Length: 292
Image 1 (cartoon, rainbow, N blue to C red):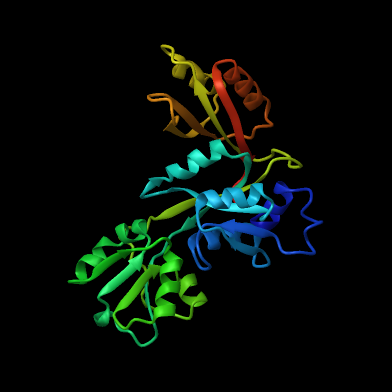
Image 2: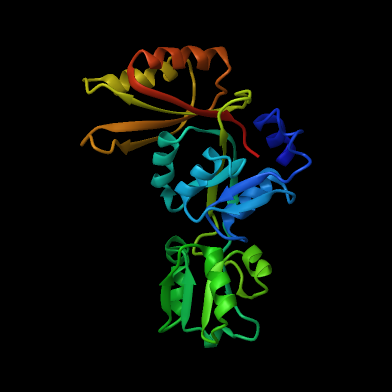
């Protein structure tokens, strides 16, 4: 089972009850953003995007039942981890229910009739601008204008219709806002992928899947991190990612985020997590899920 059918089965026993109405999905970006594309992969074309405006508002929209799910980026293969969202996972009571990896193809987009030679300003998210430095370096005298969102920059250019401006975003964004793609694949490195998570409120979901994410805090004692990680090594559990984040208000102390290549319901994982809890001051199971 693949795609949105797998998500529907694994995320909620109440999915059938929601079949009569569109599933609401909170995203930080505008229509046509990469977050929007990830939400369509998770939940299909019948889902209803809810523009939250920020990552924190995406979490809050689900917690306040303004949306059924949130879709957030968590790491990019070139830019690395999105630290803000790691912090929000620890702070909010939402659960990871699925993940997907999206190929990021940037395009240079302008209003119909605007040529490449006319472009003197390029709008986009700062990360997207940074990922397209080769193209921008060839565009002599072009001004790079940071914007809150890739698709939002296309929306802005479509509304203002300047004859000397373009945006960097996805083909989907160009289609949504009726704009013209001047150049495809303008990113410096084609091996550009972003991992997205689908989040839901806790309760009513089986924690199935072949991957588990956790976050924990430890006592400040010699060798305690080694002991914590050894509970997985001793059981041959693959740790696919480890990330540390400072604890706000407590200098030089950290929370540790782990992705495990095993489902939380397996005996090995249950025993490892039980052992880990004995060593931690703080522990949270962020979710057990599969890729879509």
